[in-house]
Length: 444
Image 1: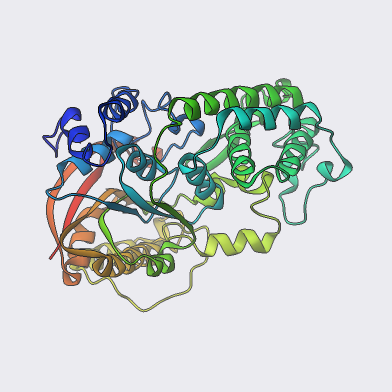
Image 2: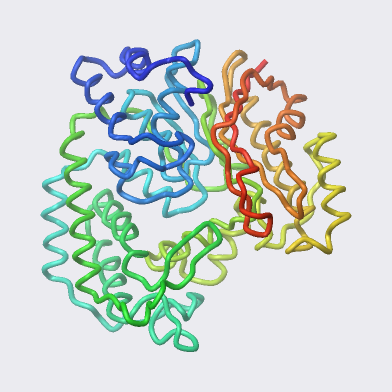
């Protein structure tokens, strides 16, 4: 963000100090932000030791410093901040540290709970006692061995053709802990479920990347046991308890998390002083797949129809779902050219529906900005971190297309700069030719 803002960390905290009152609170905020290591502020790189953020590794997150720098650079007092694509809750948590209210919208129910858990004050000692009681009395029951209807059969050993994500002992232990967590206080149950989700991948036979999951090298020889999962969960609980203890004095604040499709959920937001967000990029990553383990194992999905319903409510940024055609909303000469170029090379594309997906994507962002026009006052801002894509050698300059398409809605681009370069897919040589941008729009 230093490419955009001249405010220092001290200036950011001092600006927000009018809300985060008292010298101790200001010191707490500075200490929290300084837990980040050097790295691109548009990514989660360097945030693995930041309290609250370290509860779950969220690859797609930007750093708290990105949010703090942005808030510190605005020319007006911020009382409420909106994030229409909440992810792991970085915007909301940073706002809480700075004493600023927030509204977060997130379609993924597990990630929505992750954000709620970070924002909800909870007694650290009481939570630890409740957790230890549940683990000490944990008994795996017959129901915990059952693969629910609709859950992929590969989730539990023996899987399909000898390939499976979880050994039977790990699978049943996860399901048993998730089951007994329901008897806890609502906030404690949510936190335990979130922390359980944070140790699933490490105790599975797979690793996760943006395209989904793949099996670990020599996974057949490295099978985890239920006791390995509990040991990892013990460490996750220790970390959460330390963070809750250190920041137990934070004011509750006004923070709202809406779980749902942002294209419709924004209608529930009446106003905000600023919007800071990073939508999915049009890169065909289906994030329902990326978080498949957490959604199924923790009971957020209980049937194939649940899974399909969630997929259909996501932004149209991928082709893993067959989208219904809708009337064109985003009007952009650059977009018209790109869609025509993609259509001409349809036979070269790895999926023939990519041209339509790209057009749908900008229509969805147009709808988001239609709502932001109502929510944001004149002179206030929407700050967007967004990345380019490329298919069959055709560059999709996402920032330039977005600027053109939302100009008729009354949004003027006031700042634009590259945050970092991103590597092409291997089919395009894997070189750094794509860029991630920060776009600052003013409502006029």
